[in-house]
Length: 602
Image (tube, rainbow, N blue to C red; front, side):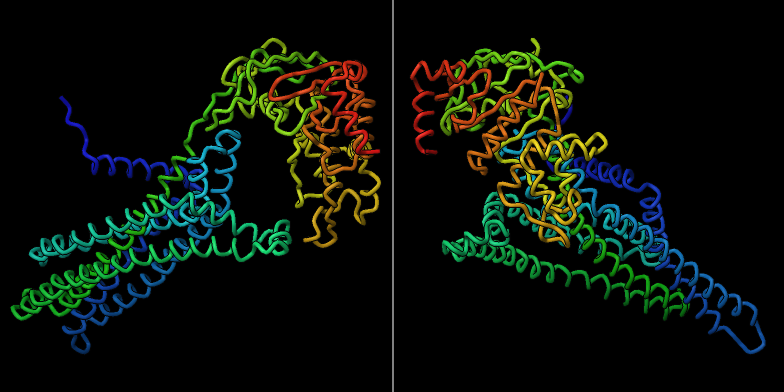
């Protein structure tokens, strides 16, 4: 029967595979430069032994020198010293070059790895608390990706240098080796213990760190700062951040202080072998076992040995700390999807699909409340429907399920008689145009880019962009911009202009028009626009969008009267449906809400 692996062996195996994963990552980023950096880093470490060896040989030759004899030998030695100096400078220069290029390339790689993973995982992944903790730690520790390859190279070089020095000492003073091993073990144990403590503190405080950073974000964001100051919340939010910073700093400082004290005491043990080695060498010189040059070389080697051990332990300590963080990052980047993607493709549809909700029940993660229960609804191809109801009725949840940001716990949603879960989501999205109430404002892009993002894979067409802006009631104010479509939508850039909230919303609606998908969904898209402008936009949707399925979600009953069918939502259920005239005739929920809102506008 196979004996199970102990925890230490498992850690070593895990560390080995982590190294392999890191090597593959750096190899993809820059194989040539990574190889150059590693190889020349090793050569650079070995040069530390070459200088003392040549110098020792030169000293012995000078001691034995008498005028007129062996001038050629000394001259050749000097030539060798000059030559090796040039060679070593070249090695160091190439090593620095490889390092600099890799640092440039690794500057952006961690961020690209993160956003590619988040896209792969989807919305549900990003709303999981434990995953969010990992994302927080990942973003704070991105520097590990940039610095780790340097430490790997230094570690390999230090290991080879240490082995070389040990080999030399083993030839001349082997009795010192056991002393070295004995005094080095406590240092490794102490360092490993405190690295683990620091990592655990980091993990245990991730949630509080997220909350603290979130609150300090209100203090530095231009959009939230004005309210914070005006309502007098500045000091309260500042205190949340500073209290956590004070707690974490003091906790980490205590650990670092204990580590430093124990580390100093352990370092004192290392001086034992240095004193013992010097005593042995002096006796060997007295007895003639070594020459003066050899004595100088071995004394230098022993000091190098001492330095190499300290360097090796220090690098091992830093590397261990980095590997803890890298292991966390690796687990995030290798996280599998919570839900598998489908395999069925729709292609680009020529006609809008038929949509059907069948006995759908859904509640949000970590919540027992059923937002929808046994819900059923059919939407015909090319139908223009409006979903109305008060806030919290379940309207937006319906859209999130239709766009597969979430999946129902029971029942199914079918697109042209195919279960939505079986569809390849990227393919399905090609046929969707969605505008949520929490739409994006791309303030680092121009007007043209903001609109054309609706179909960014295609060539930007200014004529269609202007038409989309016209439909969204945005063309007039864009024409007043000094640079027109080339205007960056932020006052933080030269020549840029910041649109008002209502103007931003119209630009987002223009992006929706420009997309021109087979199924168009608007989820409360006009909340920041006055009722008249909203009615104009909706009238354009009904007038200009032909042969498309249109789904409009709104809490304003008065602006959806031209829909083919109006669906009234309450508590996750359809309580009424029909045309505007039919629902008014019923004199029910819709009629009451419509009349109340109409009075408000009057």
